Length: 561
Image 1 (cartoon, rainbow, N blue to C red):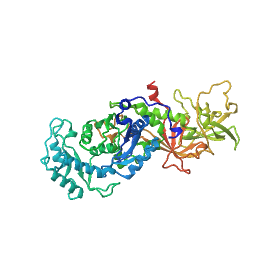
Image 2: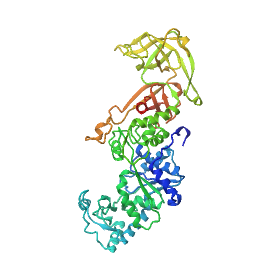
Image 3: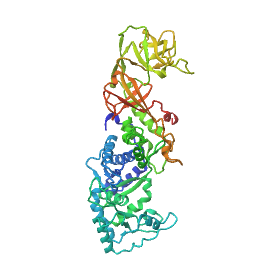
Image 4: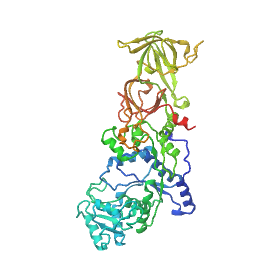
C-alpha cells in the first residue's frame, strides 16, 4: 500500500483475535492461521464488504498467516466476469494482496460431485423430485416440523443412477434435486434436508457448458474451505444458523481439514442500503449512473468520489468486530475520511460560482506573482504559484448587497482579505438589466500583502482565482443518495427515499492554475469549500471534472468528543 494511504491507527482487539490466540496457544491447526475472503461474483463490492476484507486479510497478517481470495461462483445466472474483475481491483485498491492464492468454487466442481456421490453411498443424501412449491410445503415452518419427502428412502443404487443422469443432462431444469438426509423435524430450518444440487442449464463464466447441475452455496462453501485448508472461516451473523450444516457436511465426508466457522456482526451504515440486490436495482433502473456512481456505497463508487483506502481501513478499525448488529453513523465514516484527507491533500483554490472582480487601482496588465503553501502543516508538499491580476474571480456566495446578521465577507463599501493576498474594498457594484450582480469594482490596499491593515480590523477571508490564468472546470457536488436514515427499513419502498438533490453539476467554475495538470484520482482541499477529487472516468485535460468527496465540517467529531 502507498505511504499516502497509510493510517496511524491501531486495530483494536476483538473476540476473533482472542479465539485465534487461544488456538495458537493450544497448537490447534499446528499453529497455522489461514483465512479467506469469499465474494460471490454477482455485483460490485461495497463498504460492508470492506469490513470483511479488512478482517480476513488483517487477521491473517496479524498472526503471520495467509488469506485466500475465493470466488463462490455457484450461481452462474447472476454472475459475470465484470464482477470478478471489479472485485479483484477493489481489493488491491484497498491495499491487500492474495498473491498466488486466487481460487474459484468452480475449481472444485468435480470434487464436489464426487463428494455428493460419497454422501449417497453413506446414506446421507438422496435424489428428490419435489417441485419448489411442494418442497416448501414439506419443509414446515418455524413452529411446525417438516415432513419427509416420499422419495427420502430411495435405494442407494437408484439415487446414484439418478444423480449420474442429472449430471449427464437427462432431465429438465428443476426436475430433480440432490438433498442431504438430516432431520426434517429439526428446529433449525437449515437442517431440514437442504438441497445440495439443482439442475440448471446455464453457461458458467469459468467452466463454460461443462455442467448442467450446480452445487448450492452452503454445500460448496464449507468443502471449499476445507480443501483450501482454511483454519478460521469468518462469516457474518446471518450464517450463524448455517453453522450446524457447515459442520454436518464436513463431518460426513472424508476430508482431513475441518475449519472453524466464526460469525461476526456485519457492517450497517445509516442513510444507505447494503443489499447487492437493491444496489443492482438502482443500476438497472438507471436511478444512478452505474455501479461506480460516486453516490453509491460500492468501493468503486467511493474510490471515484475520492475516498482513500486508508480512510476506509481506518473506519473498519474504528467500527471494530463484535457479535451484536448495530447501525453505524455515516458521519463516522466521513470523519475517518476527513482525517486522512486533511493530512494528505494539497490545498488549492477553486471558485464554484464565479463573480468577476475588477481592481480599479492597478493598471491593465498588472501581475503580482504570489507563492502559496501546498499544505499548511507539511512543508514537504512544496509550494504553488498564483498570479494576482487586475481581474479576478471570487465566489458569488462571498458577496451580499444586504448582508444577513453575522455575515463576515464582502459587502458594498466593506473590506475582506483575499486568501494569501491583499485586502480589497468594494467600491462599486455592477448589475445586469435583470438586477443581478455581475461584477464588483474593488480597490486593494497595497500595504496589506502579508500584513494587517493599519487602524482597522478585517474579519473576513475569501478565496479567489485570477481571471485570465484560471482553469475552467466542471464541479460535481455529491450529497447522500438517500434522505432517510433507514431507507430499507421503512414501510415504503426504499427508492422513495432517494435524495433528489444528491447531485448538482456546476459548469463554468474557475480553478487556480496549479490544477491544470491534475491527474485522475488526485485529491485536493479546495479552500473553504471541501475535499475534491479528479474524476477518474470523465475528466480530461481539455475538460477537467472534480467530484466533491466530503465537506470541511465534521459534525460527527464534535458530537463524539
